[in-house]
Amino acid sequence: MKTNVRLIKSQRKFSVEFKKSLVKEFEKGNLSIIQLSKLHGIAGQQLYDWIYKYSKFNKKGSRIVELKKSSTNKVKELEKRLKELERIVGQKQIKIDYLEAIIDCADEDMQTDLKKTTSIPPLKKSDQKKQ
Image (cartoon, rainbow, N blue to C red; front, side):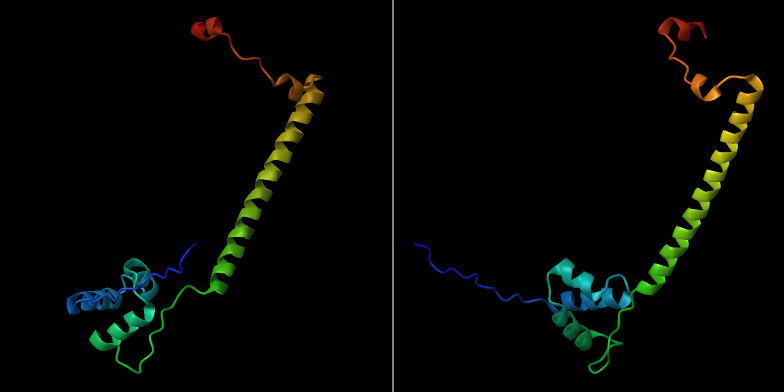
């Protein structure tokens, strides 16, 4: 029979130096609250409390806003990139059509089918040594 087992969470105590070091990392802009939280396994609210307590700039009552790249800007950049790639593909298709037209003209002049005769059998080892 299985007993009901619960994990007991132990309360961790952090030194003042550790707390201040995390606040300094945040203030330098090296890491965000979310990154610090995941890195050290500390709740975000706990980090905010430490920031309000130990920060030189952020005091209780002020709001900390972490700006991220706007999703609309990201969509616009992706649309711009898509248009550029479509333009490149269009240019390549024009070149392909042009080269195929040249091959067709050469076929008419030479009275042969260059598309079929372009497949050359691979060289044998003895042929490679001669070259």
